Length: 209
Length: 242
Image: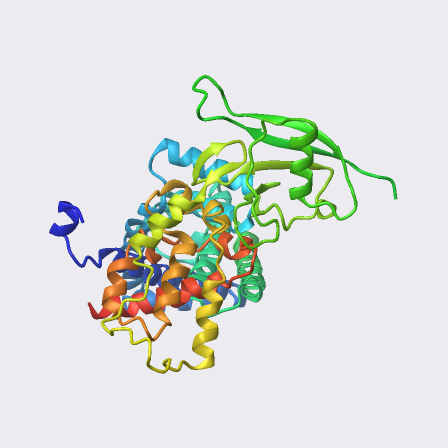
């Protein structure tokens, strides 16, 4: 026993931060998949998409979603920051380690950190655009006819990858599932959601600029 | 089938020579039928380089001394047949543990330290009565204890763990598995809150980030994912009630 430990007994903050990371992560996966389904309403036509968008604006659901995403992302980022090796020496160790042991799940964790960091920036831009411009099929069509098309494609891949690996890791850690069948199921879901996202982008693109 | 020539790329470093730098040395050896890395390394030491350091004791996958990175994979050298490996074989010592030289590391000090920190012994107030009949235990419980007890402390789960590589205080899968063993043992009277004090932190179960290299690499196949998840769930409940 040391003084600093004696002064901070029975600490459960490590558990609470882990819980915050897990819960916020699960909520974000749920949000992402719902979001992708809503965006895919463009496949049913402009009316369907605009009706859904106006419905969300009228009942303040859009504001709620924005507040939700800001709070949940902030919680998630705050919680997972402790996982990212902070010292340059530690960074070198983990990259070298992954390269030496050639273990796929170790690599996917490093990509998780990289995609997460990149997404933080992209999500901030994405939320700003939606809040300041609003949601409307023609606006979206205009946007995908600019450099923003690349932005959305990158964000789509990053988000789906990050969500899929994060969900896999959570379920594996809490142990309710068989790892290899879970990996297969999540790969299929990820391919489907990326496919749906790309189809939606294509639908907006074909609306013309 | 013609005889293969195996090329071993072996990590060489002696921490006691302050000027020496880590390097890789290559040795060529003709493969023999049924050759294990135990045989190969001993041949290299006997015929080519008596200075090469590595550890073996039982050469039967029981003592856990010969854990090393074989083509990157943390596993036991004595259980590894050369016929399952390509012509070029890289050998490195396990990370995390103190490097004694070349392929030899000190796992014992690390494991003793973890055993002390996790208080890996049965805690009970009962006085032992040598004349009394032994207390009964259900077969399922006994099997669950034996499953965890199978750990030979080779350190492959620790060497393969990214977290253990950067966090010196992390007890890793071997440490958590050790605690799980006492959690299922009805003779240990520790409460969940007492276990929480031992493993309910970043150095214990909540430091695990779920990469599962331990589960993938355990040479004797202890279901470490299940053990980690069991302790995690138990400690989450204890943490919630705290």
